[in-house]
Image 1 (cartoon, rainbow, N blue to C red):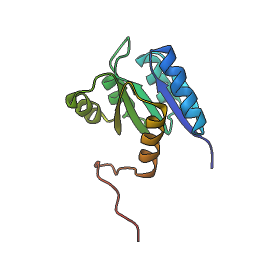
Image 2: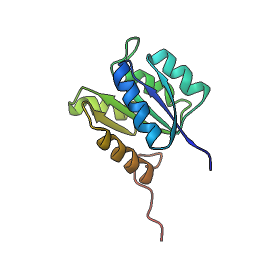
Image 3: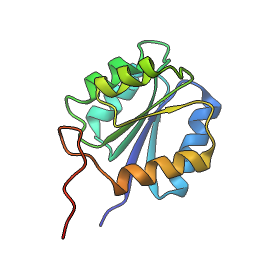
Image 4: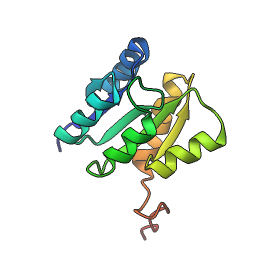
Length: 133
C-alpha cells in the first residue's frame, strides 16, 4: 500500500507549517498552497486522499475551493475556520466538506478528527456505511 497524500490550502504561514508537520507525523505526504487558486490547481493535478481547506483565503473563500474541488477530488475534505457559527459549518458541509474544524485547535484535536474520519467514512449520501457482520 502506498503513502497517503494530503493537500493543505491555508494562507497563514504558521498554521500551514503546523498542519504540514502534524500530517507528516500521521504518515501523509503533504503538498501545500497559500491561495485558493493554487490549491485547486494542486488538487486537480494530484488528487489527494485528504485536503485541509481554510475558509478565509485571500483570493476566494474556502467554500468555493471545496465546491470546485469536489468536481474531481474524491478524498476527504476538512474545512478549517475561525468562524464558529453553526451556519458556517453547515455551509462548509453543503459545499462538500466531510468535516468542519474551528480554529484555534490543538494538534491532538486535529489528529483525532482525522482518525475518526478515516476510520468512519461516510457513504455518498452522507450516511454511515452499513456495519459489517
